[in-house]
Image (cartoon, rainbow, N blue to C red):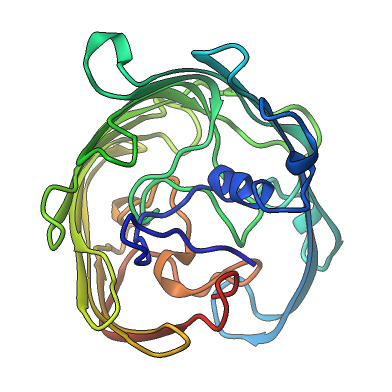
Length: 352
């Protein structure tokens, strides 16, 4: 179960909370380990076991049936206040698949025995380096989320969440700020089922994003991401740029979102130009159980040569197409969906 984020006025926020933020939210609830520890210490434990199965699949490579038991265990240790302005975060994670019909127990997308998920020191200040703005500098192994998670995000439903070794600077992140600037330089961490995860073979992922909340009905974001794998891995050397404009959902009001993304570069020495566009219009009803209805549009470019398809980098598949585990029917690449509808209902505050 996940607790939704809320904006300053109590409305549901379209900002996508990261896996780490979600775990911290759980830890801050009553009757958790953190409630029993000193104020300067965050300590928590989470375990999830899920059974998945399907049969008569119609997608390529998944014909027939499959089943898997997915287990995810996470331990969080955070130290704050006593070393101000320095904070420390350590998160250990263990992903296993004790039941797997198609070899998922040997696939790092599903299995990663006990390893370091996050390990970073943060420099936190309300007047960062004399700029007059709040800020945070994170150095170490990080988890990052941007926007609605269509390019970079932690995974809630699936086991695989990308992590990165490097540094990230965030300016203007306090609740009262109308703008946020983020910049990072990292090396993506390569997952291994048994041996320790490490950022080898060498690749680089960097970028910057700026967001504005000055106009409530037209929140905006601009971003640029650069992925350089050289001659390693998938040999992707891509520049990805885009923008997002949206209004947050509120009771008895319409909301919307428009996001356009463009990519240029090379994939395995093949010239690459691709783009993706998402649009939605929603309305939130003033019902006892909050109800929202949404119209969706999606387009993502493609080609007979898959190296020219839109590359969704480190995104989650579930952003628009529903939770996915062993069965990923639709990827946000080489698709067009002119008409889609979704409704959400929230019977209690902790269930959506």
